[in-house]
Amino acid sequence: MITESKKRDVALVVDDSPETLRLLTDALDGAGMTVMVALDGASAMRIVDQITPDIVLLDAVMPGMDGFETCRRLKREAGLSNVPVIFMTGLAETEHIVRGLEAGGVDYVTKPIAIEEMLARIRVHLANARLTQSARAALDVSGRYLLAVNRQGRLMWATPQAQKLLADSLGPTGSDEMVLPEALQQWLEQAQAGKGVSKAAAATFPDHPTLRLHYVGNAGPNEFLLRLAKDAGHSFPAEFSSELGLTTREGEVLAWLSKGKTNRDIAQILGLSPRTVDKHLEQIYAKLGVENRTAAAAIAANATKRNS
Image (cartoon, rainbow, N blue to C red):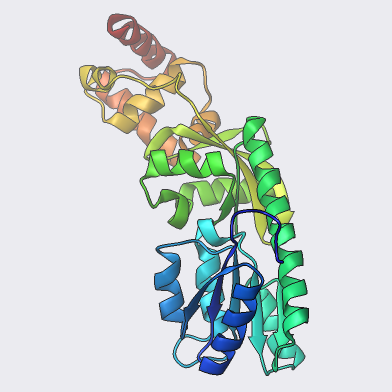
């Protein structure tokens, strides 16, 4: 048996060969697994839109979208980032093995498939995936809502509660298709390089100022670990901006300025560049009819008292 759990593990087998599909379906079903099959990569993507498999067995060479591209697309989905993918192919050259691993596969078996060997590999990868998921769930329980992004700012994985917080804040697809806004990507680059951004310095999503990110460190050569938090204590009423004749963003900049934050602090908090903060302050000073941050902060403090 693949597992002693009452829950049947779900395997998705993607192969354009009916003979291979029959062989693996019989073997996996006999091992106590639920099997879904797809004849090509496009069909596989439609299936995972409906149900998340526990493991994917993927033919590397298929008409249309090949297995390497299918794997890359699967791994872009946060909900599938931890699902192990085992490549199956008659291609045994090192070049193809490397391509499979670089696409996100965890293992590579050559055809004709030795069923007992395949089942043994599946047991190992399912166990490793469960350990990873348990570790991330434990981080949630301890209050460490973590996520990882790649160098392009695309979400690679997130702990369960971090996924929920992203979905609640960014919408139902936020936890699956999130790519960091450009300002946050710049913040991440600065954090990696240690240029004026410490691990304690948080950045916020430009359109979601209460959603904060902290840089934790590198989890791999192209994987950067971030901690997610929601700040419920620093949301400013709409009346604050409208009363002073400011835009919402200008109101946020002024509110943080009134709390003693520097321009660099404000840039990091709001996920903006320091130059953008400078431009906002120029507009704020002009609209308020003041010449410096001290006078602007005093006006903001009075407005806050009236709205509190």
